[in-house]
Length: 375
Image (cartoon, rainbow, N blue to C red; front, side, top):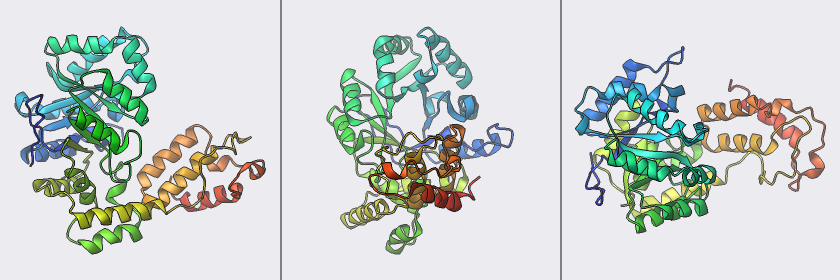
């Protein structure tokens, strides 16, 4: 395992971090403790010393599981990360009971890495209005948290404002070879590097999509090196970025964990030829789509409530990545809003509104036929 030093903090977390968010659950919704404990144990014994959770993960069960699982090891032998989920907090005073409950659930006296969760424009406004930094600094002085940071989901402009707002101990961003222009993108990484702010990466495989995607495109990687997994390419893309100190992976079965341990045991960045191949993969994936929808939303609102652009985005995403679990999740979100394709009555109102001249009712019908197997 490689350990990358966070110079200003004078600590060296493992390059591979264990993200507990995607732990498997049983039919009753409880975390599979037996499997989870085995995964944590194997990761720990193979050098992983950074473990990430949040109060909101696994319907609120994640922190309790991780805290209990890590009780098997000396507290000073690992780094524990969790998050202040301000999007779940309506009043400033709730923050204090929220945090105390986290410590109780985790069964610890302190958290190493404490993040303001999923920072965006709205959350950032709360941070400023409620004086969140002062609260975190107080907890830091009291020894309840060690390092103050944030995770991020918004645009580059917002990221830059947040990055410049405080002398953060670290930040956590989404970055992979398909998302270099998404959210803060690669430029956000370079901004953090310039400020000497350690970077922790989430979604290095784009929620697992880069572990198993469109077969014709992924075959390019297999043909180049049939002895390594498709997933390993995603991690190796990030290995060459020196400002990255931890790469989180949501490992929820032993096969994933063992493959990642193999990749991180000798973390080789992509060479020039491999970098060019990844650019080709990115380009070919971006060329794949089912419906040539530009998300202009001229077709909206639909009289029956169908979110036409969102449906087509899911359809196109499935064509690119063939990620059934992710597609099912997004379909269910639309279903809850009564905005899924099957609400279409083929009234045709949208047809004259689409500047791309898409036959929207028939494309929604084709989407239903193609993805109908996903329940």
